[in-house]
Structure formats: C-alpha cells, structure tokens
Length: 303
Image (cartoon, rainbow, N blue to C red; front, side, top):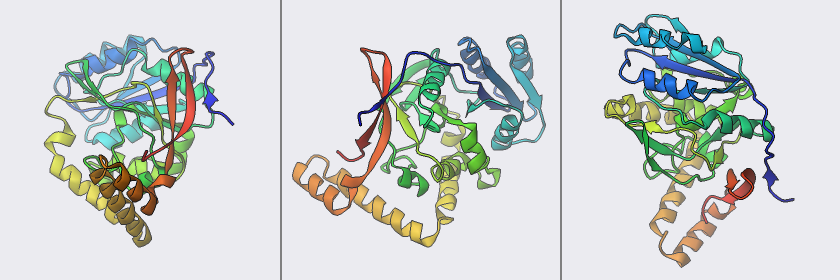
C-alpha cells in the first residue's frame, strides 16, 4: 500500500484557539492580529486573562468585533487559563497560542486541510521554527516522532530525541478528552507532561509545513525560568514507573551513541543495529510541491 495522500477539497472544521494572558500588552496585539487576519471562517477564539493591569484588556477589546471573546479571572496562572479557555470552546480541533506568539497567514487553513483529509490523525506538529520581531528567523527540518520516546519524556530538548514545539501543535478534542487537561500542579513543564499523556493515546505526526514558531524576545518564561523549567521536567520524569525509567535509560543511551558515531557510517550502522534503533519509525506528512498535496508516510528515525 502506498502513502496516504491529501485531496485538494478542504472542509472547514471548527478550530478552537485559546490565548492565556497576563500583562503582555507589548505583544498581544500582534498575536491577535496574526490570528484574525487569516479570516478562517470557523474559528472559536478566546483570550483568558489572569487579571492584567497593563492595558492588555483594552487591546483585546479592540478585537471583540472580529469575534474574539475575553474572560477575565484574576489569579489564574498560564495553564489554568488554558484549561478554562478550552472548557468554554467547542471546536473539533484545538490549540493554544501564547500572548507573545505569532500565527502565520496560512496556519489555520493548512491545519484544516490536514485534519479534514486525514481523519486517522489526532495530533500534528509543524516544522520547528523561531520567530523574532514578527519575522521567521530560523526553521528546522520536520522529523518523525517516535511515540514510545514521547511517552517516556525523551523529547526534552538539547541532545535528546528533540523537542515538541507547543506553538506548532494542534490536536482533536477527542484526544484532549481522553488524555485529560493540563496539570498546573506540574509547574512550568505542564505542557511537556501533557505530551507524554497524549502519546499514550495517539501518535504525534510531524508535518512538513510551518505552522507556528517560538517567539524569542529574551523574556520568555522558559528562558528566564530555565532552571525552574528543568526541575519541573525532572519531576515529570521521576513519576514514570520503574520499568519505563529503565526503558528510557536504554533508549537515551543508544541515542547518544548513535549521535557520537553519526559521521562514521560503519559504527553508526552497528550502533543502530545493536541498540534496536533501526526498528524505530514515525509518521510524517511530506508536501508534494507539484500537486500541493500532503503524503502521509512512515520514515525511519535513525537513517
């Protein structure tokens, strides 16, 4: 059987977006404008504000005529705001965009195309990217994800299996309902923990399209609070059952060896074979630029 292929006919499934905000007036107008300018015809968009006092709410109000709803509940943190926002939405497709992030002009249309033409997919992520000053500065290659490694929290950045970029992720509401909402008690790595739970119910499919990007302005929570974020990740990993921790250690060890021998074909091939890495595959949506369609294919993680 050949790869699954998208068609050009696209429905417009209802897409629910949530933007959590607290005193980000310097950025939120660009965020809202980037979403609304796409004029997606079936958008369910809400801003949940934790009690801003910097003029953010006045900016959000400027977009009320475009259909952007706003709920203010003082004291909510980022992840509590996201959970509450999703409770108040009804879209089949979900995602959140932080109040310092930018959505791209084609994002929602491409997301609609993918979920409409590939009903078997529940969770996707676009090519990783960095956006600065409203412009795309860096785009990484789209690579397939290994579902078990996601379950075992091995996508934590650095020299690990990679990273799940929240800004580029979209999923079906049915997956959210199976896995459950974000857990604010986890701390800064609540999204990291959510991906591990998602992976126990669905495969994350990489997409050869730019759907969003990390907005680097120097004051991001994950940058300013990096040490706290790493401690939060460590806490998530520590909660894994012992058998899963052993498997995690095995995969991590052989992944490091593979990277060490990346430029030595013979040693790389031997490492891949002994460590069982040659058996690891993931799904990816590759864009055919002649037909303008996506093909869903299986690709080896360690070529």
